[in-house]
Amino acid sequence: MKILNSKFYYSQSSLRAYERCPKMFKYLYIDGISGITKPEIQEKIELGIDFHTLAERYFIGMEDYFYVKDTKLLNWMKILKEHFSKNLKYKSEFEIKQDKDGIFMMAKYDLLVEEGDKIRIIDFKTNEKEYNLNLLEDNMQTKVYMFLLGENIK
Image (cartoon, rainbow, N blue to C red; front, side, top):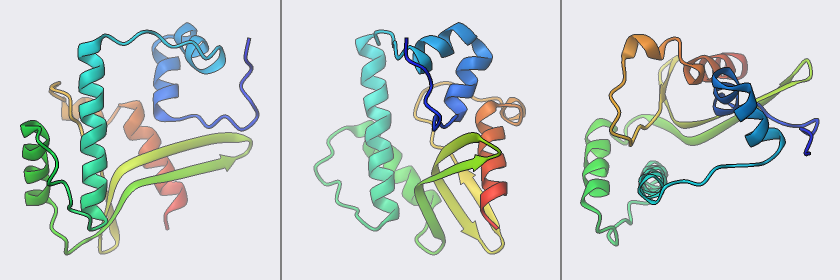
């Protein structure tokens, strides 16, 4: 059995796994056992990863995705460009790690948008699930992202 090392950083996904099912948390994060992903699910995961990569490249000024043939990806990039002009300050794929009182936490933000003295957190969702905005306030990801940002960005 693996034991969490002293530098295990809890993320929103690990905390959500524990919240849903402590045994699943143990399998994933202590024992290092992961399940088998169905091919159709893996394909969607890879599409999401590709989009995140293209979005990150867009925000650092590398719009070289001429090689992309997937119409869904191209459409997502078109929408992204329409919503996010180059006039603002962005931090793409920004990571915060914190050690406070021996508790290690981390978050990786898809995008932080600096607008004057405010920071907007953008989390790209590439699945087809509809989200209830009222439920998002109580979501583990929202709580962890807001907490770590508030603690570390002044």
